[in-house]
Image 1 (tube, helix red, strand yellow):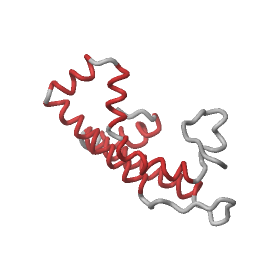
Image 2 (cartoon, one colour):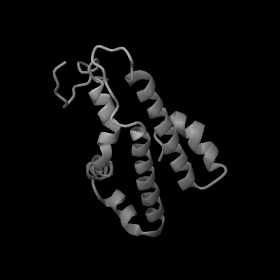
Image 3 (tube, one colour):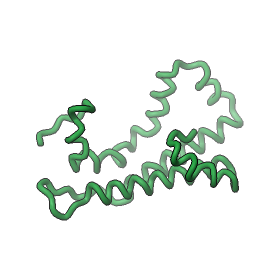
Image 4 (cartoon, helix red, strand yellow):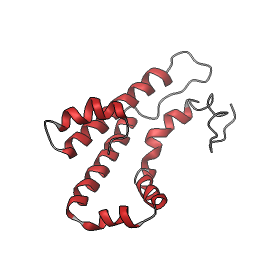
Length: 137
């Protein structure tokens, strides 16, 4: 469910102790959205820079995580009532299940990735982390 140990201990479990799992998941996604908004605001938006970057839109990180919270909450709710969602996870190969999970975010991934790509965030890590993005710097 929650993959980050810090988010699980700091947000999910405390909220889960007072409410449902679905609400705890939504709060965890919101906390992650706030964290990523902070990262983008503090580290990417600079007044003085060689290559000035202007954000696509403030709140895009949060909207991305809200979208994922809704998708996960729907999947979690349906999984309790319909055997189809459980069957998909059990019968299909893990690579296909991962592809289907990623496919729910692909239509709106630009909300999340645009600011990182446009600001050159990945430029310094391109040697250690090969990338499919090719740009002239």
